[in-house]
Image (cartoon, rainbow, N blue to C red):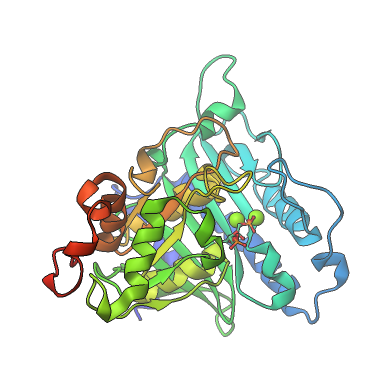
Length: 349
Ligand SMILES: O=P(O)(O)OC[C@H]1O[C@](O)(COP(=O)(O)O)[C@@H](O)[C@@H]1O
Ligand SMILES: [Mg+2]
Ligand SMILES: [Mg+2]
């Protein structure tokens, strides 16, 4: 533990010259202040149904909103009023909001990720992405958010779990800060997180098995076959159904996460949203030495077509993510598999 406070870390990175602009640091500080309000609401005792209930509305993507989704969106939006942010886009709002037209940044946010878990007392979080704002006369506010994720200036998420943590990447590394009750601020707990290249742990919602395409089914079949299959080792499975919590685990001990496309209505591009879920997670993961794809192509190179677009997502330990791609593009991985299985080990990662 190196123990730098978030404030000291941001000051040292901005002073470095190759770090983020002071504007980016100011935005992160504001988001951290709002996240502590969310933490306070969660820690104040049993969540009132006023928070965990549903107002009966759907967001722009058709998901049923919870009151806490709506409240978190309002909190993060209001914390950015007066910040150097030109545009704010949220899972909970159909269109981006104009804040400060003179500012140079755009912030995309999933104000409450994993909100289906509120009543279950499972970790949930807030995911954010900071981009350069698109400039020019008559520029459409959406333009700022239709840039590929490789243009992100910073990305991170807060996780409200047994500990409240901030996972942050300003490029050139990913850091984890944990809120210290004693100091009253976020303190660096993991410096330059490094995801192991290899793993024997996968995370996927297995209940969708019958809806997946063949490549994903075969990849999972081979993991399940364990030491008796082509991988020649046993795999473990985890599925928290909270993207922030699954990501945190992978950062700390490796693994692969998959939310692939599937045949259900509305899931032909998976479930997760490119702009404010997959892009920031991919930025964090790549900066920790991992990889993130839509099963084949690097997430950060995809050009979003609309703000709420969904994307199939595979991320985590590099070798495993590369292996998923091979099931999609290498006919040897699918055709005539049976004779190549087992102890011959042709497909060992
Ligand atoms: O319930 P499913 O289909 O397994 O999906 C779980 C996924 O959905 C999410 O809850 C989607 O995020 P939101 O709660 O922000 O809509 C992720 O956190 C999680 O990985
Ligand atoms: Mg989410
Ligand atoms: Mg959400």
